[in-house]
Amino acid sequence: MIEPVEQEIFEYIGSKIPEEACGIVGIRKGRMKFYPTENQAFDKLNDFVIDPKDYRDINAECDIVGIVHSHPHGDLEPSPLDRAACDRLGIPWYIFNTEEYIKLESKNEILPLIGRPFVFGAYDCYTIIKDYFDTIGIHIREYQYEWEFWERGQNLYVEHYQKEGFKKVTDGSLKPNDVILMALNSEVTNHAGVYMGNFKMLHHAPSRLSCRDNYNGIWRNITRMVVRHESMI
Ligand SMILES: [Zn+2]
Image (cartoon, rainbow, N blue to C red; front, side):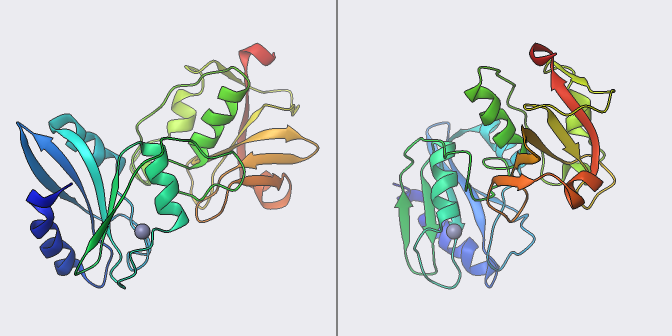
């Protein structure tokens, strides 16, 4: 458990009320240490997001043994999102209110492709594409990406698709397993989905469950590029 740092965590969480607070517990040089992290969520009153860059920096400095966040309203019950992200990351989660906390053990499993809650960095538009391609034997790399990378001068889909063996489709065709690159509320290509055929696209948009959506209207309008894996050409 995390007794050596729990008092420090209670204090930190108290200082952030009414917002949700978050942080990481690690072991550094044989000592337990709490690393508070800034909550990057849009809705800090009801949600939290740890910037994957913070996670990476802390991971470089210590062995991470727990992810901490608070439920300032007091109810310690993990949300479906809490549970899903904990399982995916394979690290225990600790949920605090001002008086007590619970530990959530990771089951180390990956959710099915449909119906996932959106958890940036664990269940998002990139991970569903990666997980989908895993199921058909095409393994694309894990990337580290920052929250709102598209507002930080990065264009990750466009920068990396060629390295992962995808080529831009230039003849206007659309085939199953094509990856559709989109710009959602942004000038930069920041969203993607996999075309499933029959005008359906598997994707995972922020604040929504992953699903097969109709590929028309809005999604078609914000499409910037279609890319196809070289094994499908
Ligand atoms: Zn929670």
